[in-house]
Amino acid sequence: MDWLVESSKLTWTSWGIAASILLIHVAAFFSAFHSLQHVRTSQAAVAWVVGLITLPYLSLPMYWIFARHRFEGYREAIREVGNTHERSVAAIRRELTTPADCQSTNLNSPLEHVADVLDTPISEGNEFRLLIDGDAFFDTLVQQIQRARRYVYAEFYILRDDEVGKRFADALIERAREGVVVRLLYDEVGCLRLPGQYVQRLLDAGVDVHAFNTRQGWVNRLQINFRNHRKLVVVDGRHAVIGGLNIGDEYRGKNVWKDRWRDSSVAITGQATRKIQAVFAGDYYWAARTNLPEADWGDREPEAVQDSEHQAGPSSEQRTTSTSTATDARGRAAVCTTGPADIRPRAAMMFAAAIQAARSRLWISTPYLIPDESLMVALSMAKARGVDVRVLIPAVPDEWPVFLAGYHYEHELAELGIPVFRYYAGMLHQKAVLIDDSLALIGSTNLDNRSLYLNFELMIAIEDSLFIDDVAKALSQDFRDSRHSNHDRKPLRPWFARAGTAVARLFSPVL
Image 1: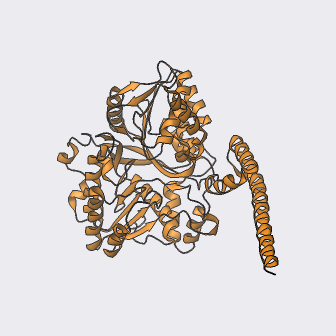
Image 2 (image 1 turned 90 degrees about the vertical axis):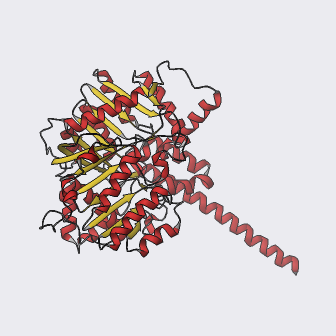
């Protein structure tokens, strides 16, 4: 009888294994059909179909984690909050959108081209200050927070529990204890190494802290491939700082391969700050599903700001420090907010519109160089028009797969006659675009597939001669600190570097 029992167990085990295998293959078949309908490009769809049919055990989980390009639920969350907080949601729409599918500007400048393509309004009468590298950024950030009288909104991809991270937390805690409303968003993937006690300390002090939490809702359980890559701080709806820097010692050049972490940020005063505030509000609605009752949207009399120094902006002494530029500018700007919740590929459209508007100069600084085909065509067209096209990328890696994939596109650009320069004076993390003497874009968006299609990003397009001159001077120095790396068009040496580049390029859609 024992052998019958054992035989019965083996039979049920065999049937279970067979059923599991059949289920996996059936799920892979329907996933392949799903990919034909929903994957963004035909090349990617073909790759997924082949992988799902031939290697279903490996490809099936990867498909449902990495193949999605549209973030579900973000717009619905804003609509949901809008049912009970109509004023705030109306303010977000007013600050960030213009009527779609129609010409809303005269298209007389590169700024208007970018704003019109993105259906985003242009704000007038802003003041900008270019912040070069980490010390200028962190000093300005802390100063702005310390002067807050009503509220502070902060949002970062990465937070570190180190010297800079503690300084940032202390500034938030001090304001919260003084009765200022302080709200903080962070990306849970970017902050995987952030100790729980760091967040708990903020919560205990009265800071409202939320992870962005892309995995809300059963539909989004596997949405770990999306990131909130934005970096911003808004103070009292009047002052803002945005750029490419996260919160950590490494962004001051500490504990990295190079002594200098090259980055750029912008301190902003003016109408554009409410538009950046609207970006935070949309992200906050997704993360917390609630309103920002204290937010000043300019449709009511703001409370008096008691700190006259804060009202006046940075002092002349602060403006002339060695860590920031010596001029404050006044001009127009468009806040360019992009992400996987967009119906259209707005980040790629932003770059394409800026590139197509260039007439004499197009300088791009990016830590990651994985442009899609449409941007390669746009760059090629700019070069054909006789535009001075240059691309600045790191000489040392921040992320090895992306760094290796960049070599492939460096050689493709060489074939088009577009020079690529590698920066040797530090770790280049700057995301900046300079168009002629007319427009500068600075923010968090890299020239890679992840920033173009998978990340929530934030750039500001600035039209002001003084600010643009500051950016041009900074980039000119960056190019002097770099080497023209694709001039001779020689293949990589040794052979395993070429192999690594080829493999990295295969994974470029998810890098």
